[in-house]
Image 1 (cartoon, one colour):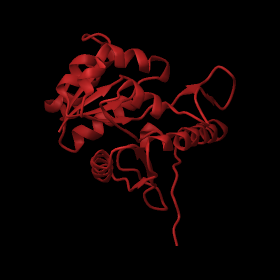
Image 2 (cartoon, one colour):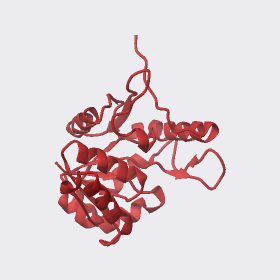
Image 3 (cartoon, rainbow, N blue to C red):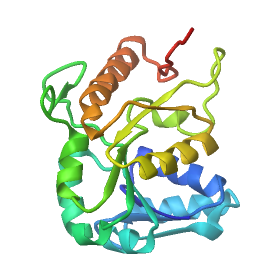
Image 4 (cartoon, rainbow, N blue to C red):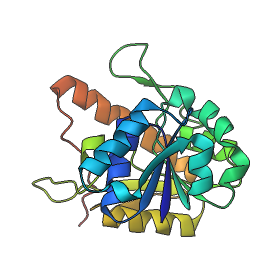
Length: 219
């Protein structure tokens, strides 16, 4: 598939690398076509012998290029990024929402900007009414996105979204990345998954480690 990634931070770069490693073409989008971080990511992909499928462009370029999108922006810039990309360009496309509406100004750990009766995932779906939004990759650090390796076996990735076919697509992607997926229902499930991110971050800050993830134990 052709994957468009909106965002040039560590989350976008790690996911982009995973998609390249599993045989997809990836365009990293940003506000300006000549973004230094995106260009550096493409150059690194070339150095890692994965560069044939890597490219960079604007947010709008990435959305028009892609069969599937990944939203990997800071929450404070997410709405503007989608506006620059053109919400109409997302029509009918699966959008993996990896964002978290975190507010780091009030202390440690961060607080949620949205919660209880709303979520970032639901807001993204409202911004992109014709897209198929699936929340995923928001409850673990980017170092573990691709082929997570833990002594207790692979952790679980919790996902949610309103479209069953879109969630099946994301589940297949997660499987190729080494993750079992647990579908918790509609996009309102992001009200649960985004607070789970604050638990992940709080633990990371307290113990100065990002080597942890969540797993649902079954009997």
